[in-house]
Structure formats: structure tokens, C-alpha cells
Image 1 (cartoon, rainbow, N blue to C red):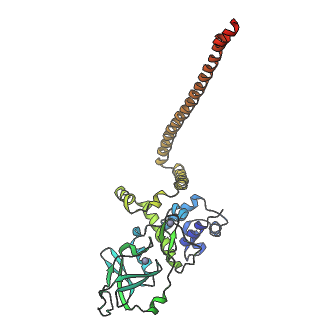
Image 2: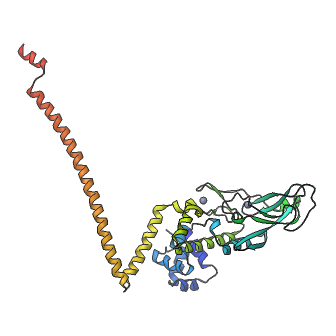
Image 3: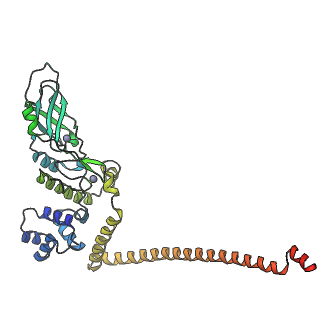
Length: 347
Ligand SMILES: [Zn+2]
Ligand SMILES: [Zn+2]
């Protein structure tokens, strides 16, 4: 059966490329690629490896489509997400950090308001006070940098907050221009996700809901596959430890361990075959290792089987002993008649 999500991700990688160009890039026949894209064929793992390679992503991502923790994505992806947001009017940078500047309105009473496409609502931030006059720009009353109030767990504003730039008065007309969206809740993770991305970091994409910003989801998924590729190349053990302890969301580590093992096993098998077929010294080294490990595993399995057999024998032995004891009792009964019987016999 064709995996619809897999097809979706293949289409993301393909982008605007023609099928022929895509086929040439991944070095797979054009007719095979057509089959994968229209769902009449499912690519085997060695083809997925070929597809993942030029895009620097992983077979795991092609299968699972796990999205990144929004705080892990790099500045390039982050700025792409900000740029795609119609409410972001500028991006400020400070050393290695970037900040989105959002279109903000002043109600002249107590609050500054900006419309967040990820929460589908207006967010409020306090202004200087009720008597302060309207002041446009980023440095007005209450303008400037603020931490995010986003409910959506994967809102890009959660990375470093927002910079408010007051552009005018918050009137009813302005307020009613923007819809109030129902928050999107992922039942799998019990978390709210962005209404603009229309997808949760666990990989869930809400296909039943109309997405007003489909290009945003494309950017988010592109961030995900690039991040998956970068993670795979990560070899600094300290960095890995840090990631596992803090910034990686739990669902990425824990979800579907059985299927994940399966993929890596097939991936391993393909790589193992490639090494064994190569005419290098690695081939004999790997063969020797495989033989040694295989023997060790078989020995361990053999021990387990022996233990199982022993357990079974012991149980049978115990049952036999009980039966023997019962039979002995009955036999004793025959040899030594009960006192009543003896009396009867005597009488
Ligand atoms: Zn928000
Ligand atoms: Zn989720």
C-alpha cells in the first residue's frame, strides 16, 4: 500500500524540479520515480537512501516526517518562516540571534496588539499607560522586544520572542480584519500546535483543516528534513548528550521504537551489503566481526534455550514427584487399612 505521507515528502524534496531532473539528481529511473510519486510503487529502502542523499536528509525523515523542535531550527529556516508571515514586517539581528518585528496596533488605553498567525488570535502586550499619546515605531510606549505569549508549542515566536512595532491605532475595523481561529490541539502529544503551520512537531499534519498558509508548512518540513540530515552527521558526543538531555522533545526519542528499529535494520543491511561487496580491507574486517558477533549471539541464545529446557524439565520433575507422592499415599492406604476397616474385619 502506498504511504501517502511518504509521497508528500518526496514531493517536497522534488519541489519545482521536473520529474526527469529529480530522477537524475537521485540517480533512479524516471519511470520508477513516477511510480513512487503517484503511489503505484513504494520505494524500497535502498532507493530511499539514494533519494535522501543529495538532499542531506535521512530515510527516517522520509518515513516518519518528524518535525523539529522549533527551538532547534537554524536561523536560515527561522528567517524563512518569519519572512513567510504577513504580520512580520522586518527581521532584526543581534550577533547570532534574529528577532521578528511584528505589525502592532495601540488601543491607546492599556494594550498593544499584534495578530499571531500561529495562534490565530491577537496577542496583547501592555503599553506605557492610559495617558501616553500614540507613538509609532519600535521604541514607543511598550514597543520593543517582548517574550512570546504563544499557546502553540511550535510557534517560531517562541524561539526569541517578538519586537513590537506600533503602526497605528487598534480600532474595531483593524480588529475585525483578522479571524479568530480555534486553537489546534494534537491529541497524540496533548499540545497545541501552530494554526499557520497546521502541523505538530510529532509529524501530525491536520489534513482535514483548510490551511491558509500551505507554503509555511512546506518551509517547516524543509527545516525538518535538513535538521534530520544535520543530526545524523552530528558526531560530537558532548553535543549529542546535551541534545538528549535538554532541547530534544520527548516524542522524538520515544515514539514508535519498534518501527524505527525496523528502518535502521534495513538501512544497516543495505550498508552492510555495500561494505561486503566492496573490494576493500573493510570487507574482511566486517566479515570477521559479523562472524564473531553472530557466534556470541548464538551462544547466548543457546544458553537461553538450555535454561528454558531446564526449567521445563524441573517443572515436569516436580509434577512427577507430586504424582509419585500421591500414588505412594494410596499404596500405603492399601497396605495399612484404616482403623475402622480393621475393626470391621475383626467383627
Ligand atoms: Zn502566538
Ligand atoms: Zn503531536
